[in-house]
Image 1: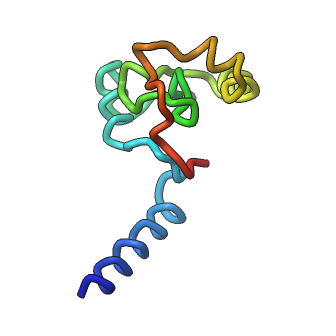
Image 2: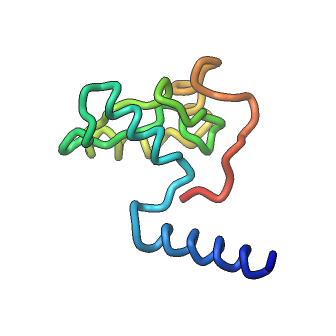
Length: 106
């Protein structure tokens, strides 16, 4: 039974990764809570919810580490956020951990 349960869980994870929202390591419910806290319970059209300090840099997955960005702003930030300079610019003790806790993210 354990093998069957693991197989079902793996299949469900694969399905979510390929058939629902773009796969990411963030918790979808936290994103929804961020949208709601900003007054946009169904999301903000034309805007991207971005982690200020990237999860790959030790950023925490919480509404205090999220912001809205335009697609152009997002692309600009993506160019430097995973570099030492980006970590210095965007990560601090209130929005990140000293240790990376998220792995295998796209």
